[in-house]
Amino acid sequence: MSGFRSTALGFTAALYVLAGRWAFSRLDAGGAGASPFQELRLWIVMGGLLLATLGLVHAAHRQPVPGETRLDAGVVAALLAFFGYLCASAAWAPESTFVSWKLYEVILSGVMSLGLGLAALRQPADRVLEAFWVVVVTATGLLALVGLRQFLGGGAGARLAVMGGGPNVFARLMGMFALGALYFWRRGGATWLWIPAAATGVLLAILTGSRGGALAIIAGVLTFLALGRIPLRRLAMLSVLATVATVGVMTFTPLGKALSHSMEERFLKLTLKYKDGEAGEGGVYLSGREVLYERAYALGLDAPVMGAGLAAFPALGLGVYPHNLFLEVFCEGGALGLMFLAGVFLAYARAAFRGRRGLDAATVGAVVLVLVGSQSSGDLYDARSLFLLMMLSSCTTAAREAPEHFEPDACVTAEGAT
Image (cartoon, rainbow, N blue to C red; front, side, top):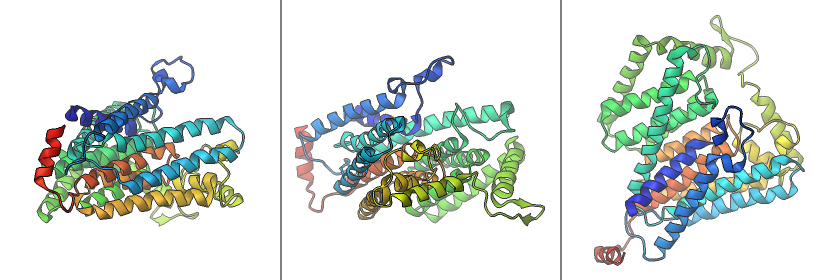
């Protein structure tokens, strides 16, 4: 039963990270707009609530033993305060249809993030992590194949994206694929398989032309390397294999020319306005995001303490969203919103530092990946995996911290009672 719960939990968490706003109505080309009940995310969260209930019932019958997930009280309290404040900010939001929809998304994010911690109670941490990354790597690997097929089938002239998602979304998913491959490599997986797979994820992200996505992947992989305590010999092997895989792709596959074009157009000419050997005038090109940033900052200054209210940015016609997590929280939740958000990061940092010897490098790398990516792409719900991953990381990290006075006999007694 424990194995089933761990697998179900890992599957549910991974599906929630990957599903986004996908709705069953997309299967019907002539269908009407999606209702909440047609969206996969609602049913995923309901499944998470069911697992959370099972976790609470299971936890009531015995104490945790070493190796099992544990809630970090600081992270739980910080998430409750943050999501609770966001829900409260709907009370002073402008009157519009945007408020109810965004409130629904905030509730989904809060319930799923906190529900994951409850569902993971008394579960083997390694099994939960493995189940999570198995689903992530499988799903994103299939998306990578779809992207390659699309590219080789004639889509090389456009930025790479699949299944109706944008290039930034696909880049973030390829970052998760790369980190998942590194997770299995670090756990003793075949180097010849997982390192080229990680390199493929990075290369496909570059093909999207997403500069924020590329920066996020670099930050995530560097975090993995810094926390993973990779032996020098394995790190050298990683570098050699990744370089060989990249050179091989650039030289012997149709992706080489497209990668060179993407680097030149998106990362040099477009970003730095680099042309004919010299940098152009006007500074860095941000695809119009600088206008959204200015509007969000100005809106925040109009109500600096409590913000303009939930979903005020789209309700006031300033844009769909600011494309920056901190600016979105500031303009709609004010300095108080930023304070609660900072509380989440501080609580997670404290939990990570306290259990630093038990950190899973790939999961923390994924936290950094989503955090960096959310500064240039997506809205608060698009950053949902940031909070879920912090909860997953803190729960499994606490599991690796054995009690100071742990007695093996007590463990045997506890296990025998279940």
